[in-house]
Length: 202
Image 1 (cartoon, rainbow, N blue to C red):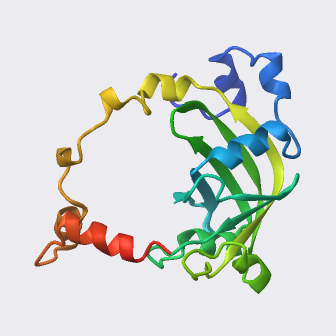
Image 2 (tube, one colour):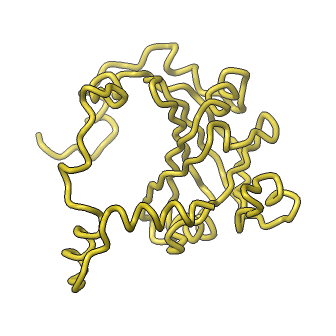
């Protein structure tokens, strides 16, 4: 057997999950979920287009940049990016969203699944003003599931261990990679790109 295409085939290859793993999915945010969200400066956001294709994008800011409106609702500012609007376009077609909250140095993560709506209410935008600049939009996420995820992936990857960090010089600059991929005549230097990023963070 090579390709697995049925649930029975799949389940036969793995032991049953522990009772604790079965029961840990919560229908709303509890005090521990709130704590993780308050400490998290980085969240991975999954969305799905009208064509069924999945996409994952990072969202980051100061710890706690994702606000808990109530036990069943999160607010996430949409800071300036590349203006492709991949995630927002997906959410218009399909409001399903998956979030993975990360805390540097902590191997456990928090997974939140739900449905999102894109808002441009001035009252919501004003909650997230930095340097006088509000986000263009705010995502209001209606939580359907929330649960803590074990540390194994981060333990195996040594993701937060500085001894395993890869030097930036191991890769060409972003500008060089884009030059090669797009057939551009010149490449923006890493220093130029980082300066442009700093000037447009908010």
